[in-house]
Length: 294
Image (cartoon, rainbow, N blue to C red; front, side, top):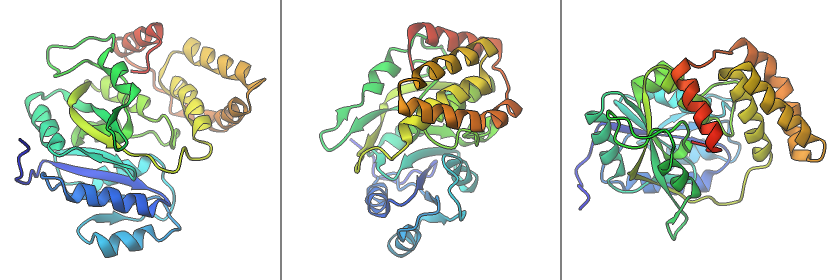
C-alpha cells in the first residue's frame, strides 16, 4: 500500500513551453502525490500565459522564467534551484505514479554510487508499456553488484530520478544539444564521473502526450545523435555517424535538415569535445554492436 506521509527527499523539476493546459494537468497530478514533492517549473519563454497561470493556480510551485528558451538546459536551472538530495524530472505531459518517488529515494539512499534511475514508463490512460521499457530491461551491460538494476547509458528525460550532486557534477544537459535526444550525453557524462545509471522498473513515470510530436523534433533527434558522437566518442565513430546522415540526406528531407543543423553546431561541439574514459567507451561500443539505445 502506498504510504501517504510526505517525503522531503525529492523535488520534481518540470520544463515547459507553450503548453499551459497540459502543464496545469501535470501540476495537478504532482500535487496529488502522497510524497508531496516540492515542484520547480522552468518556463522556456512561453507566450500562452503559462507563467501567469502557474502563479495563480499553483502558488506553492517555484516558478522560474529565464526569459528565453533554454531547451533541456532549463532542467539544469531547475536542479540548481532545488534544495533536496534527489531530483525527479517531468515534462508538461508527464508525472509520477504514487509511491514511485519514495521508492526511487529509497534506492538512491541504499546505493551510494547510483547517480540516475531510468524509470519504467506507462503511456496514456491505459498505462501501455513504452517500447523503451523492454530495451532498458534487456541492456547488454549487465547488472553491477552495487546497482539495483541493469546498467544503461540512455533513458527518457521525463522518466528519470537523479542524485542532485551527481547531476551537477556531470554538468547536466549539454547546451550544444539544446533539445531532442539529449539524454545519452548526460548518461555518458554521469558514467564518466563514476556514477551508475540503471533501469529500475519499480519506479514508474506516466507519459500522456497530447498534440503530437513538435515540429522539427525528429530532425533534432537525428542531429543530436551525431553531435553526441562528436562530443564524446572517438573520431572514427563520429565520422561514421556523420557519413551515414549525409548519405540519408540525399533522399530524406528530414535528414537534410538534421545535417544542416549539425554543421551549424559542429564548431561548438568540437570546442567542447571530451572523449569518454576507456571503460565507458567500451560500454558504448558494446551497445553499438547490440544496436541498442540504452
